[in-house]
Amino acid sequence: MRTPTSHPHSAARAQSGAIRGWTLVAVLAAAAAGAGAGWWGKSQSGAGAAAPGTPASGASAPGTSGPGGAGGPGSRRFGGANRVQPVSVQAARKQDIRVMVSAVGTITAANTTTVRPQVSGVLQSLLFTEGQQVKAGQQLAQIDPRALQATLSQVEGTFARDKANLDNARIDLARYKDLLAKDAIAKQQVDTQEALVRQLEGTVKADQANVDSARLQLSYTKVSAPIPGRVGLKQADLGNVVSPGDTAGIVTITQTRPIALIFSVPSAQLPQINAKLRAKQPLIVEALDRSGNKFLAKGQVATADNAIDVSTDTIKLKALFPNADDSLYPNQAVSVRLQLDTQSDSIAVPQAAVLRGAQGFYVYVVSAENVVSTRVVKPGAVDGDWIAVEGQLEAGEKVVIDGVDRLREGAKVEVIAADPRQRQGASGGGRRRGGGAPGAASGAASGAAPAAPGASAPRGERPGKAGSAPQATTAAAGGAERPRWLDRLPPELQEKVMKMSPAEQEAWIAQRRAERAKREAAGN
Image (cartoon, rainbow, N blue to C red):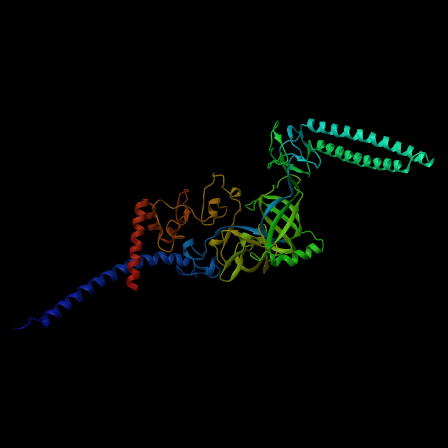
């Protein structure tokens, strides 16, 4: 039996038909890609002529912000290389920069005591107001003294009796000695009287101690402040029977004037701190709230601990604050700034002006012609919102503090107020205008405004991923806003797109993207 086989001519005809089919598809695709490329080339040629030397989409321009300049302000995603960008500036200046060390500390009372009664009794009165400042020795409470007053009277009576007996024994002794001198009595009787006198002297001395003790106990019925400070909330009420064994006592006193602050700094700072302390030079300490924004008080370092904490490699410091306004409370957690030194006449700029990129740290300087240039700097000590820098920067030169994300080397800028409330049109009465026109309203500061609902820019024109940032717009003559990427289209096409509804614009953009994807696929 013969096995059926394919005829060689039939296979050749099938292969030839397939080749002709694919060739026809390729020709049609090439024609469509050519037509789309012609239109897109016209729209891009207009943008290229307006910004010669602009890097292609996805490329980075030298001196752009961000590490390596990726996605920098020179790319098309920010609306063109030579578009005037609104920025806020501030002049560099010479000033003294404090070398500060930041830490976290806890406020501690210089002394704390719980006032407890030293005798038992009924609490008759409280002579303080909760929260008031009291002096050492000031009476705070009164305990019923009647029982102890009776005890004092009893021991005073015993003392008076024994004292009278002692006086009588001394008189008898004097008589006996006189009779002994006349040889009228025996010497033994004189010796016995002398012993009696000494015995009574001891009794009187003991009675005197009892009297002193009773008086002391009676004085304890007046409860006094042992230290100066601020009293807390009362722990006992009138009419309560109080005793020395009460745990809570009557009230607590914390010495808050002065008040102490305990905080830790890296041990590497210890030699400089010790040198200041030995030289009796003040080490200024600032206490701020937990957020570090609100200033609370200023004090000085009093002493350092006697050992370094090996687990954290830090040394504890104790600072004292006058605290005359009671702004600091015991056990309060605060942010701490310790001033170690002062750098005189340093060139300083706002911290917001210092950027970091592939070339290191740098700032944008605005010239008199409103053109920005990059200056590489070396940052130094930070003092509040200002930072000391070293480099080719002079006092008085204006550095960009807002709007740096849209800049590149040599870009033209328009200087606007840093405070949005001070910008023209901030009250809402003026028209918002983009494109860097002179006298731009506050809306131009960001260089972006919300796009029409559902609209999106062609590939390479959006400031970021979908939904990540507002779409860049420009203002029409009538005050209406439109996407900036329309400026790259022919005038007749711009008018057509602007007349579309948001849904039609979105469909039109999707179609353009699909054509571009086909063109790129054909090119590959």
